[in-house]
Length: 223
Image (cartoon, rainbow, N blue to C red; front, top):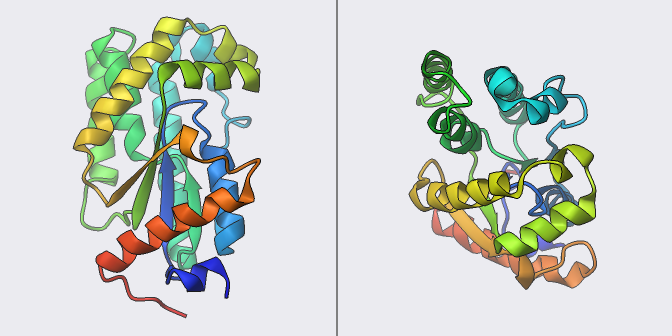
């Protein structure tokens, strides 16, 4: 029996992975998709036309970056549900407004007009009964020290050149954000309690937890 059937994971489930930069979202996305035989929806970092510019000058490019992310994530969310589900998704659309846009506004790197425009657009697109929310959000959490080590190990120049204070701010905001998140059920995982890349056996306990949450909410499996 495969893990999807063993733990009664619906074929049409949509599971989103959330967490700050460097926490291992893509690694867990790929591990879960392989174990459950689900498709992946990966964040397209390399094709983002604003990302490099943003890291060089937050004030100039924060609004452009957030609008780009909102549009791309909205299109991807629609595509996932129109396909019929069965996806593991790397990063959620909710993090953009709850963390990134809000942080730049409060720190003065996004103007009030731009922030109001962005949040109005987000609410009109996402915070409606018609927007398809995921069945489960998996939140990856860890200490700031562990996350900084992972960022250093990954070696992306634009991230390594970013001041440590930025990552401290991001870490704090993520912890506050997840405590109040309510758009869908949440499974919190500490990154030191599993190794999805080196230890294939560590993925089954995670899938067991996923199945328990989905079954508690009376999701009906569709074949």
